[in-house]
Amino acid sequence: MADPFGLLAELTYRCPLSCAYCSNPLNMAEYTDELTLPEWQRVFTEARDLGVLQCHLSGGEPLLRRDLVALVASANALGLYTNLVTSAIGLTRPKAEQLRDAGLDHVQISIQADAPSLSDSIAGLPSFRRKVDAMRVVKELGWPLTVNVVLHRQNIDRVAEVLDLAEDVGADRVELANTQYYGWAWRNRDALLPSRAQLEAAEQVVRAARDRLSVIYVVPDYYSDYPKPCMGGWAARQLTVTPNGDALPCPAAQSLPLPTASVRSDSLARIWNESPVFTAYRGTGWMPDPCRSCDRREVDFGGCRCQAFQLTGDAARTDPVCHLSPDHAVVTDAVAAANSVVDLQLVPRPHR
Ligand code: SF4
Ligand code: FES
Image (cartoon, rainbow, N blue to C red; front, side, top):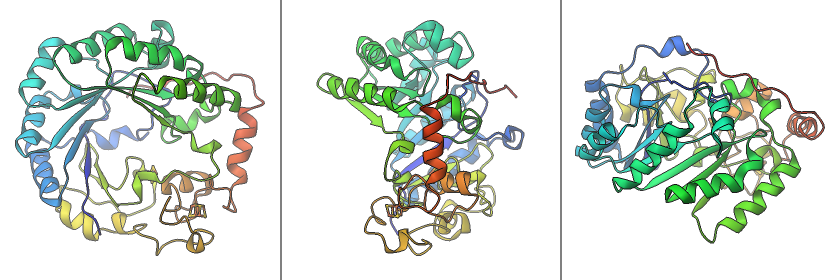
């Protein structure tokens, strides 16, 4: 078994935005008892001792943690590479300077579109201007900046303009991630799923932009013949710790019917090595056919366990995105619907 490489530290699920594509859990009330600073410091230490090199400080909105600067300083003191994953709401210049002094290594800012009105309507908050201002502050303070945009039916036609904006603010990298249909995004799936024509147009724009910008484009797997190698395999290289201390192999795994493992009651090493939630789908031994006998089983690991559960009710089935899956029709039906329906309204995520 390999060591984990990255820790996704979900510091809080509180968030000022209400994006219709949010993939965080719906049962937010269960996550209000957030880990304290000393508890996170222990998690960071145990993660470092397990081999983790990168610490992604995420949420919700991590800037809502009053102790964020101390959290960054702790992770930095342990030698972890720290990445702040933020909406930028609250990333004022004084706060950014404190985070820089604490040793923050990298900033990733999400934006919903290239134009204020569309971006603000998707985010559910007037936020576009603050995000662009924060991007400029990040570059002025000398950080590498990744601009992240979740793509869907309502904004994918604006990819060229999004890339222009990223270039204008001096982004080092742009991450265009097609929506993952978990959490609130699942409820909005039919309004979010782009058409094939939209995707093909966006892909052409991305290809042309690669000469001038570093662009990561995460293909929407509903349109692929094979599933994504989700998380690089279940419990293979990444782990997530939720705001209340649950440890998971991926951020969406709390939806699966598996026993929970908490850093409040167990060490990260024991959780990683022995807990049922981490061992359930590690490797290839759990696989059913057609994955069991497939040449690609070490390439895509049977796809995404959370998607298999979402679409079939059984996390141990082949990801229905795979054209070899006996459940593939649930995906092709959704794609057919996306290519025939008129535009549906997004339902913003309610605040809790
Ligand atoms: Fe991947 Fe399983 Fe499909 Fe083979 S059958 S391509 S291993 S999902
Ligand atoms: Fe959980 Fe893919 S999102 S395994």
